[in-house]
Image (tube, rainbow, N blue to C red; front, side, top):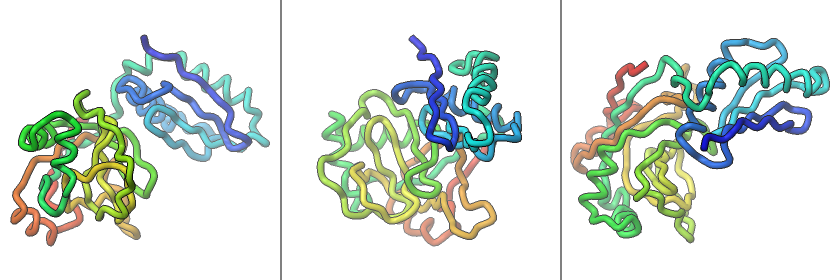
Length: 243
């Protein structure tokens, strides 16, 4: 059963609209669609909107704008359609990002395959053919959370912390993938390595990916990766317009 949106006050900084108590495709779709429409409304009291996996935060100074006044407007907007079945936003792209799986570059592929109950080659086949959505950006600048993978990939985070994975690392846990945008400690398992850079400080367009974009991670050999790592920030990635 689809959940009902819940509006909560966040101190004096704004309101949070939650479309689910946990990650699901309909709840993420609703958050993406609602934020897009809300941005287009261009309400003067709203200074910024942000989204997580299944929620949208509306930044408003609640000293100047009473919370109930904003809640009423949000409730009216929520009532205009079925957000859980809404169309995804326009302007989205499909990215194909070359990825080397395993080797010394991504040393936890074997471990991940075992946890998922797959042999390494089948794990690579599934990961390299999966098509996932940018669910949200967060934790670090431009860091994309991608999903959802099939249920077999509902594997937990590891118990120990990996001290650091490099920029472009592809990691997995709980049916999601992440491309790291900077060297970072993580409890997610490092299964692939890309030369893709989603965040470039000082660039006129610092984030290449946006929530709602979709990605695949086709497998390449180590030699091909070594060449791509010397190319542009996208590491040989190709993109096409899908909406």
